[in-house]
Image 1 (cartoon, rainbow, N blue to C red):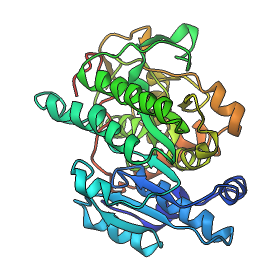
Image 2: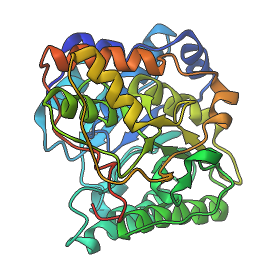
Image 3: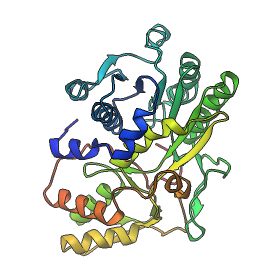
Image 4: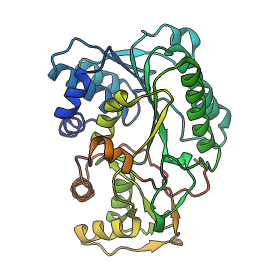
Length: 338
């Protein structure tokens, strides 16, 4: 994975609020499944906040580390990396009993045709982790796809809405939430379900995909007419600060920006910046995977990076033909097939 230094620094800079919050947090932090797109930002930001607060705490970054560059990056920032296959019971049991756990492991891409592995990763493994860390405080990453698509005219899904998963991936993510909830209630483990949608930065995400499509003069699909987005730096900060919100009984929190964003409008914004005529394809639907972030904003205020700032940053990066991560979100999918 490519880690340009200026991007990495921006995505991992802790706020004063985070530094204060982490000082009040007892014990070390373990980030399980740290090797994905967001994981390094979470672990490095936590370590930077700890250092700025002058604390003697460890941040453990735990993953298989199929990408050695990710491990090297984490090590260089003082994160203690542990190469572990969480699906191996002996390796899981060997992990240090940290007081704080941010759980990010999961399977999404390649779900179709590999459903058994998806269910094992997303529904079975959380139970093993919840039992291993029964005495910890846990923030468990989840997804907006646990909700049904919402009518964009009436706002996005709220935390009190019932699940409505479409397809096996989304259903397995509901399974992850339910299994974590079960063991949290059984063992009185403080838990927060961190429902994310969609994290973005310059190298990947909904905005990058739309921007690249416009830049390449290709038609933009309107099948998923709207989206919820949030900058990855804010996601990382909220994940760490949410450790203080973990509770018994468990709490759910939507992690997204304040706007429900029109895909058509986004494409037109990029077209104007690129000097490109925008073309569209597909039927513009009145329902989409969108969430209401009111509860999040009530806890932490508005995100540090606004939608217009995101658009400007992604536009500049796309025009400069900066490197991309190459992992599409597949946010346009309406059939639950990933």
